[in-house]
Amino acid sequence: MLASKRTRIILVVSCVTIFFSITFFAYWFCKRKRKESSKEKKLDESERHSDLPFFDLRTLITATDNFSATKKLGQGGFGSVYKGQLVNGQEIAVKRLSKHSGQGMEEFKNEVTLIAKLQHRNLVRLLGCCIHKEEKMLIYEYLPNKSLDYFIFDASRRSHLDWTKRFEIVIGIARGILYLHQDSRLKIIHRDLKASNVLLDSAMNPKISDFGMARMFGEDQIQENTKRVVGTYGYMSPEYAMQGLYSTKSDVFSFGVLLLEIITGRKNTGYINGSPFPNLIGHIWELWKGGTVLDIVDPILCQPFSAQEEISKCIHIGLLCVQEGATHRPTMSAVISMLANDTTLPPPNTPAFIFNQKTSHNADASTSRSGEAVSLNSVTITTLEAR
Ligand SMILES: *[C@@H]1O[C@H](CO)[C@@H](O)[C@H](O)[C@H]1NC(C)=O
Ligand SMILES: *[C@@H]1O[C@H](CO)[C@@H](O)[C@H](O)[C@H]1NC(C)=O
Ligand SMILES: *[C@@H]1O[C@H](CO)[C@@H](O)[C@H](O)[C@H]1NC(C)=O
Image (cartoon, rainbow, N blue to C red):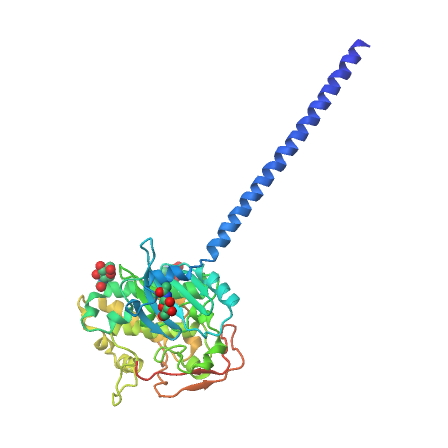
């Protein structure tokens, strides 16, 4: 009797203990959960914040001396670029977009958010944007050594870039394009690769600029301003120039032109009337067929004899990139593999050097071909003859 009473007491005490323990643990668990989720939320917020790097208009006015003419770095189809310096000393480049870009604000914000996420050592870094009434601006890192055209097309400045450096630049550009084409979250076709869109940092590393512009400014608004050049004469693949069709292979074409320009120090379009060759590609092709292609290489590059084999290989790769048929051109990843490895390269087919006419084409491509090609509706491509 006594024993069973003690047992009952022990039982009750145990039950109470267990009950309190469970309650306590449940309470502790819930509290921890809540704390965690609030931490997550906080992280979410800061992440969202960093996704939308907005600059105040006043900050940019201060940075650029109110967009003074002395700070102007250049003017492109999409607007003017100014050099600026933030209060913390950081140098920036501000691209002030022309007022009537035809793009909605929400769309613009979304694009900036996406493009700000693209990060690659061979792409110019977009730091953010500024939206104020009609004004739209893009803020980029500032690069001190201008652009590739400033060096390779100038007889004395060219000498700063020996073959080793030029080869590094070629590889860097190729990696940047590959990232745009397939490694980034977005698939971006640049559409305006050219020497002046390759900027150089303080160590002369190449950084592709304007890679977001192709995306931001849709196909449809090009028509209203025929002076606006989408793609640049001399770098445009034939299918883009003639039919408005673009794909990753049109960027490969432009890369090929750029590669040949880097090796020769000549502009594809720098050929005067009366020259036996329509352009650089045509000239190289003639020499290639005759087995004397090294004659056109920038003389500065031929100094160490050992470089010549690599230079020949690069010309070969360049010719593969500018082949007339888009499907024959290699992908960017194949290009990088060819540049980096010693492989047997297929012989190039006839390149495209057909479009040295001074015409504007009214392309009216309605259907998109192959998975990749995108069609432009009634895009007016104005080709510039004198560039
Ligand atoms: C900046 O320049 C514009 C005209 O270009 C002028 O209207 C504006 O008041 C100036 N802003 C400042 C802060 O100086
Ligand atoms: C590139 O820029 C750096 C830093 O501004 C400068 O020291 C260097 O001389 C420049 N290189 C060339 C080749 O101009
Ligand atoms: C070089 O070729 C090998 C074999 O084909 C390949 O695995 C490697 O990725 C290539 N290197 C580059 C940089 O593409």
